[in-house]
Every structure is written in structure tokens, then in C-alpha cells.
Image 1 (cartoon, helix red, strand yellow):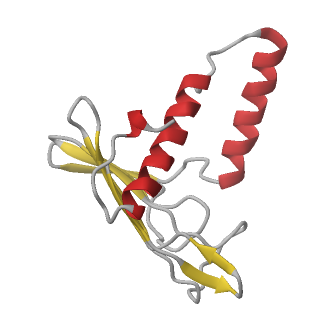
Image 2 (cartoon, rainbow, N blue to C red):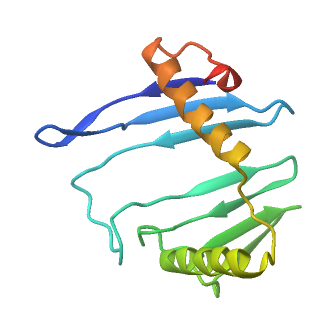
Length: 153
């Protein structure tokens, strides 16, 4: 993993770790890039906060793209899938940010009461996420040199 983490002051004495770029390769050869930009004066319509998240997964024959999460900056379908030369757009999805918290909370409570359904995050997975974040900060502090997340304590 290589990372470059910047700092932007949003209020006196309060900084956000953006702009940031993180690039990594999984053990299976799949690569990822996470780019975070910051435009503190940009207005975006939102019921929550003015982020404009988008993410994409690209494969050999196409990609899937989520166009918005908390904000409504891009007026495109919530989900677009391009495969085999055809674009499919999905408009009628429950894409309200709050729905994910509601549904996840309900699943957690159901699991606690009955054990029904799998838990999607284990303690080991949580530690891996923490190692990823620590490796990003370590790489950035070292000038963007490669760091192996598995070596993070």
C-alpha cells in the first residue's frame, strides 16, 4: 500500500485528513484506489451532510458504479452496471443513506436475539480494517513508501 494523506483546516484548530490518495494491491492481485477530495465551499443537497460519495468496481468485462450515498450531487441512477457492451441503470432502489443504518441495526438486533443470519464483520475483519488505516498513515508519514498492512500492530 502507498498513501498520501493531506490536511485541510476546516475551522481554526480543526483539520480533516484530505485530500488523500491510497493505492493498494490485495494478495490475489486485485488493486484498489481510494481518492478523497475536499471542497469545503461546495453546496450539495443532502438530508444528512454534504458529501458526494461515488465508488466503482471495475472487472475484465465491465464495471458497477454507485453514484451517490449521502448527497445528491450527481443526478444519475443510484446504480449503473456496464457489462458486455450494455449499460443497465437501476433507479428504483432504496438509496436513502438512513436505510443502511436502519437495516443493519435490525439485522444486529435479530442476530443478538436469535442468532439468525450471518454477521458480516468478525473481530478479525475489524482488526484488518484498522491495520489498513494504520498502514495508510504510516505510508504517508514515510513519504508514500509502500507499507504492508499485515505488519501493523
